[in-house]
Length: 166
Image 1 (cartoon, rainbow, N blue to C red):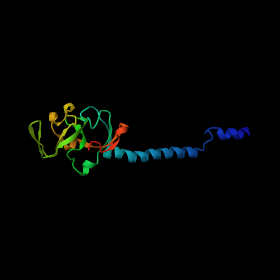
Image 2: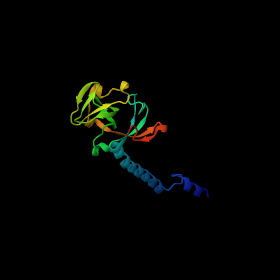
Image 3: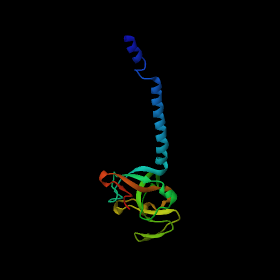
Image 4: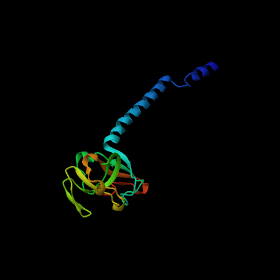
């Protein structure tokens, strides 16, 4: 009787080695499938964005957590009044969030001066004009620097919304 007990528990803690291998294989398969699904979505369809600063108040506040739609602008051009996330023209490693007020080839008047936008240039402003560093200071945003548009606000929880700011 003692020998039966030791044989059952010795070495593999009572587990079938085949079941243990199967569990490891199932876990690896699960991780692989998740990676195949999540990585393309994160790289080409949507990405998270954390608002930093007061330039878009009252629409967005510092600390708002957004999901950015990266897909739409591959099938259509950005439109006036849309809120976009883009790479800052003077430092492309930094991301900004602003509202489009001028489209390519438009002539707009800002603070008494006329500005003619070139093809593939967008003029953007923060909703909180007094606290915003925007196209009035550093010029238009080239289309290739636009990452996407604000799609979902996930935080704060009491302000969760689809296409916030539109």
